[in-house]
Image (spheres, rainbow, N blue to C red):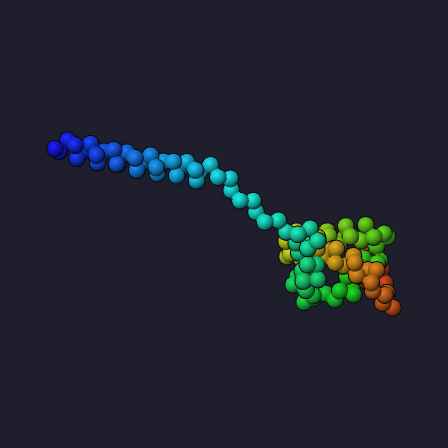
Length: 124
């Protein structure tokens, strides 16, 4: 009679292990869910917020706009501002790019201040 009990227990135990192995195999083969992508029309970093966080304590946005206006051309101004931010600021690269884009948009929106010279902007 004991061998029948042992046999039944062994069959039940083996069946349980097979079920657990099957469940484990199903869970391992599932692909990981894809990370949610940010909508294309929402920028990763807001330039105005980045400027306020990293620059506004010491620099007025109008001064930085005039710095870009004093450049020989728009692209040279953006490059110079990006280099300045890399050397001078403490913002991450994504914030620097957002700041350059924000200030570049302000160039066309703001009117020029009187009395501002190219030397004040740092151009030779």
